[in-house]
Image (cartoon, rainbow, N blue to C red; front, side, top):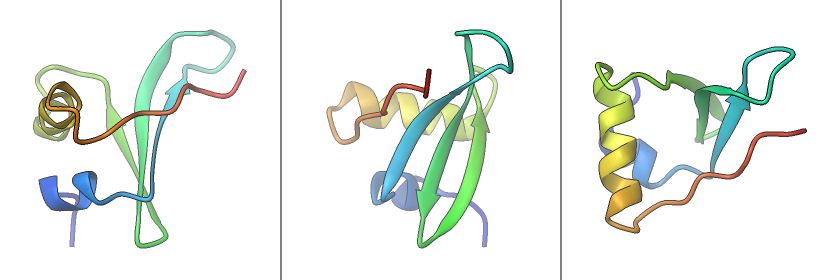
Length: 67
């Protein structure tokens, strides 16, 4: 099954991933039940919108990308 709002909310890890060679994040890596999902940082993406809602409500946090 794919990624949904419940999996995002209960993820074991949420982390920004930078575009190769830059400090600009391009996706959010979501780890749920040992499965990694990559959510593009795009306001037209439903998964990204769910992440923003949960973030705004204080229900999740997202770790910074590796340097």
